Amino acid sequence: EKIEPTKIDGTEQVFYHLRLLSNNSKVMVPKENLELVGLRPLCPTSEIRSLFTILRDGNIDTYKDWRGRYKQNLDKMKTGDLKEVAKVLKNLRLVSSKKSLSFREKKMYERATYFIVSEVAHVKKIDEEHADKLVEKALVSSMQKRMADRAVN
Image 1 (tube, helix red, strand yellow):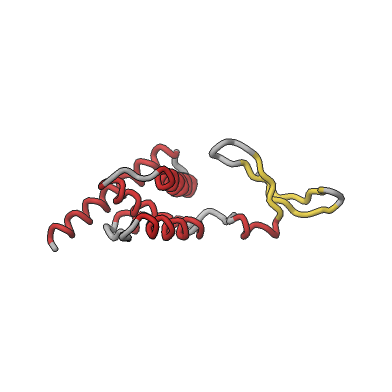
Image 2 (cartoon, rainbow, N blue to C red; image 1 turned 120 degrees about the vertical axis):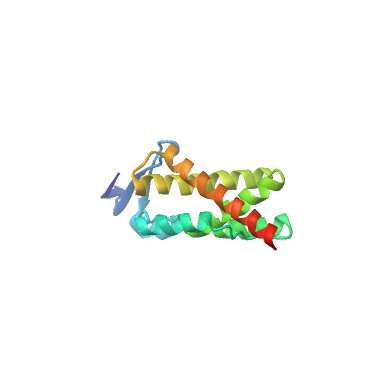
């Protein structure tokens, strides 16, 4: 919402004043801690196009066991990189089509979905419901391509 110097305990620092869209709470982040908390500017429109290419392509990382899958996905989520989070979303979507996700994986799927949908909505200047439909359509396309590739091989 704003960037301004703020005095706390007698020390003045530049703070980013943020409002979290998910729950409307307000947070102040010192400028020198931006990378530490993963704060970054919205991605450019070209990156949204790349994101949808990844979401639709049918290439999905798979892992033998749930622990390996969870660790790999968690590491990707921690990067905050849109493309890495898209890979997590596709992986968990594939797993959920075969069996139910664990509680932790359901939460990760929800976080990944929210992360991508909210970024798409803000960059494309559309509402989140429309962005969600675009993401869902891309995921369905990816699952269909994967099934078609598997049928051929």
